Length: 117
Image: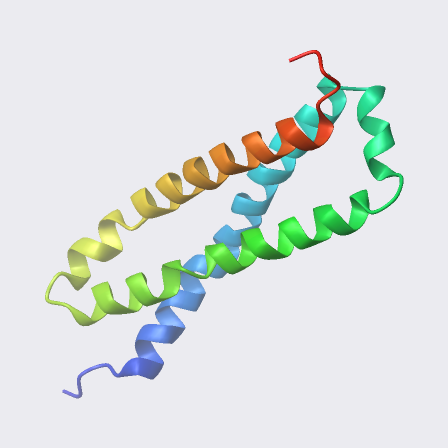
């Protein structure tokens, strides 16, 4: 039996993580929208000038950060703990969403703040 190679590990990682990127982005979007509506109507001024571009850059950077999971996943698959990793890698997803959510909370709080917080 041939051992899986980098191609198979990468395919496994993509198959697992890419559908979950939607959950990650939805969680971050929910945080941003919550801050936007909680600080309304003052938050609407954010969209004047370069606010939309700032949100776009932040969304791209959040998705680049999401890609940090791939080297970890591929390394864990290559290890002797592959079966255990497949069983518990959802924990990394939860930790990643919580961490990115905390960062998003602070950025959104600063972006939409009306001086009431």
